[in-house]
Length: 364
Length: 264
Image 1 (cartoon, helix red, strand yellow):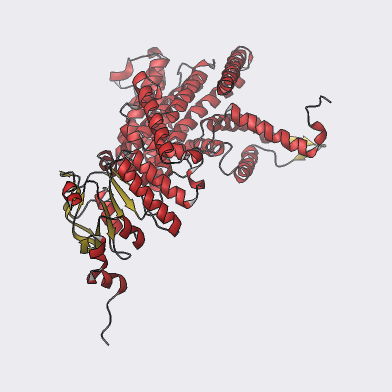
Image 2 (tube, each protein chain N blue to C red; image 1 turned 90 degrees about the vertical axis):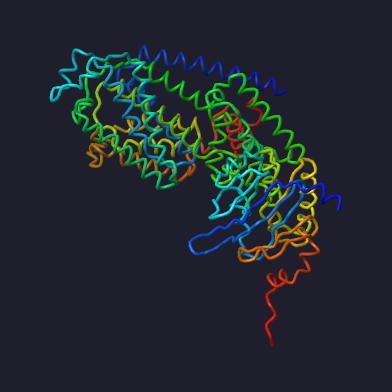
């Protein structure tokens, strides 16, 4: 019986994959530049959410350094993929540092380089800060994230300082961001399913007990921190590739709060929750733009609808969600066919209770 | 007496350990010895420094002075995870389970320390990592069935009744494959019937897994029934040692527990 059930699940999964691929191809071919940009941003936010959830949701450390790691990845792409002949135009105040002025690599190697540089930064920062706990860790990582940003602001000959870097070859296809997001998601699922994922959860549940069970706290926290740094670097690299121009102001610590919002909303410790909420937050913020435009109802100009109002609406919606789903949309659960099936059964039972005539699926 | 001769191989020794917190001396010049296959209890009034002694042995604290030896090898100053890997497992006075995880996961996690592959092979499920992972699951199933936890296997740890949580914590400690098991007040908060069950359980696992048991306990009936030897600690100082009868009749122990009779 169990085998039959597994078979059913495989079929359902194949249908889901086929449908998603078809949908993505359709989206890539037929959607407008604007819609594709939103899909790309959803993908990047999903990667960043996963990166942050690995530390905050699965390993139970409160880290707020995402924006800094993202900046490292973004600048790796920005510095090395801008065509050599336009570099003089970009770096017009001070010429680029001669050592790197002529190095040009493709997007893929630059993205991977970004991931690795970010992971190295996480490793170096991890040594002092991972000995801290709770709020102290949050403050320290937040501080390091700002240090990275300020360093980039002042490294004029490498990053072009506050002017930022433009003419980054960008793409309007959705394949890079969506592809990396899918690979990251699969990687996270496998990692969390593995014994290392369980060790992370043990640290989240109770550090002292985890240590007493032979789990090396520092090593595992570092592992989680470095993997998260790598993902954030990749996310930043994709961001640079989508936008085509970056400057240090984009990586202010407020950016980190967007990701924090995503993981809190989706559920600390849920991969599928992170994906769902990254789409809700990114697409929802775009959809709410109607609140930013003047609104005329019954011939009366409603004064509240003006630029900035969408953030008010958004915040109210968020508060409602946090009030009614205090553990986020998914808690620590993952979306699965069983979960959907159970939910369907529960809802059906509720309707039958209200209206017994529905029983029997209307075959009477 | 034959028994005594057979069990003279020391598993755990502490040599003059002192633990100072600022001006407070929690443990003062403590030397104890726990031999292979023994059940030894550490008793004493509240605040005597029993748990501190445990924390020094398991590496939570590094002693101010003195040495902790495990089978003749110094483990002083090692981190708790290293000491667990060397075969010392412990439970906690206030139960520390992985509360939001299932019973099965709790035990599975304790098998992590014997996992020898790196995280990439584990994540990508390479053949050797897969084999080890499978072994972990088999071992966990075995232990769960052996210790009678199969009926609650998929329950969340915090949803278990109190007695069973204690049970699970011992099971989790056993999963790390220890030679020496340290139990910090295993019978705390248990009723007499549960205490009896626990006594039987400790004896059983001790024989089955070839353990040496060192425990802190307040339930005197449990201590007197199960221990081969007892150490008594008061204000961080060892005041008595010996078998249950000797300790029970030691005037110093009676004094520590009941207080001195005031001169009239």
